Amino acid sequence: MAATLETEEHKQLRAAVAALGKRYGREYMTKVVREGGHPEELWAEAAKLGYLGVSLPEEYGGGGGGVAELSIVLEELGAAGCPLLMMVVSPAICGTVIARFGTEEQKRAWLPSLADGSRTMAFGITEPDAGSNSHRITTTARRDPASGDWILTGRKVFVSGVDIADATLIVGRTEDARTGRLKACLFIVDRDAPGFRRNRIDMELQAPEKQFELVLDDVRLPADALVGDEDAGLLQLFAGLNPERIMTAAFAVGMGRYAVSRAVAYAKERSVWKQPIGAHQAIAHPLAKAHIDLELARLMMQKAAQLSDSGDDVAAGEAANMAKFAAGDACVQAVDQAVHTFGGNGLTREYGLASLITASRVARIAPVSRDMILNYVSHQSLGLPKSY
Image (cartoon, rainbow, N blue to C red; front, side, top):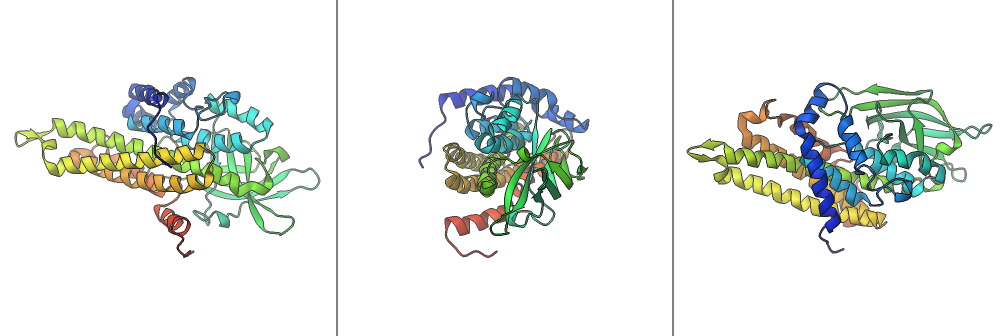
């Protein structure tokens, strides 16, 4: 697929979101984290301007675009130092899955409120013994033959934003009546459902979005809590995971751009030996390489977004994994070089870069590790034998 330049509408969207991000910036996000709050003001304004729902269908209150537009929003907010991580989860994963596979009732109940930001939805897939291997998921759903209700039992870990989400889209497994084998299915679980408990995970990561362990102890759900077709669970699951990887790439590219821009500004101002340190190739060249790597990662992200929006889930899966891999590495290197450019100042709270050292690792680790992406590419793209 040939790469295409951004449309004029995309350029305008990028400029508009950049202007919004500039009004808030890194200081706003740092203050929110320090006070233990959430970026409610930025979330509300982004929603009001139509940015949160830009990828959702127009008939349900969205902008009618796709993950290409949503990734621009997250990237530009990240480049301004104030990314909204819940955008990866609520509109990108959950919104995409419901828009493509949900019932008409589910679409009407959730998509308008996800688009206007009045409600959010978390996403639970990872388990203590089933990280990248979704086939080992042990959260099970069984039917109550008397009522037709679903009963969910299991545990999830590293679920973002459950404390502020109105519901969580849970990946569980049901038994195939014909084969007896377990198959993946998706369920909407209300935050106040009896038996649905959360425990916060103590993280070094400084972000307003907290991480949680979830316990589902015979959580009873109505029959209509099931999203889509019970027999098409994996198809529906991966339709949500592709946007997740693309948005993670956008998160990483934005953060990397922010770090490089801060380092470039400092390298122009910081004068040693009677000239700015940016005049020295030992400072200038690594920053130039960081910029190149971020731009290359963005191109793959744009390709993945176009494939995803066209409905080519298989090709989008390959491109989304590659984009996430490239962006994660580019982000880590950009942040590292930015801190190095600042020297000792890069580790002070005053300059606010040290916290990015931990944050930048997120894009390498989540939602799938770089090693599992290499496994995917070696097996799926290159046709090499599986090692697992």
